[in-house]
Length: 115
Image (cartoon, rainbow, N blue to C red; front, side):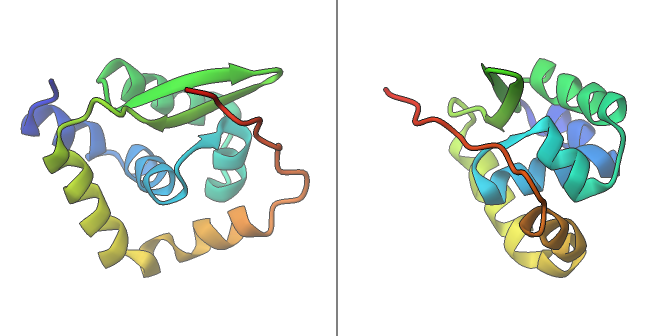
């Protein structure tokens, strides 16, 4: 179970905060999508995603060459509620990232994940 202090420490870094909010708003993103949206290198994005995963905020799955990240479905309701409010209140802060993601050429195609 994630505590408030663990959550706020996880989101204290701008890269981790933007990645988490983009994932919260999109449902699931791969490393390459986050690289494009945030205009950052693969090692930097992967390092921050690994920290978010180790803190229990995100889960990952591999599909071929892609690694996808999503919010941990076991997060307490208060965490999801808080992330929803933050996403809605900060669309302008995420606008450039969302636009880059929307305009990304060659976005990977997700396979359906069954139960």
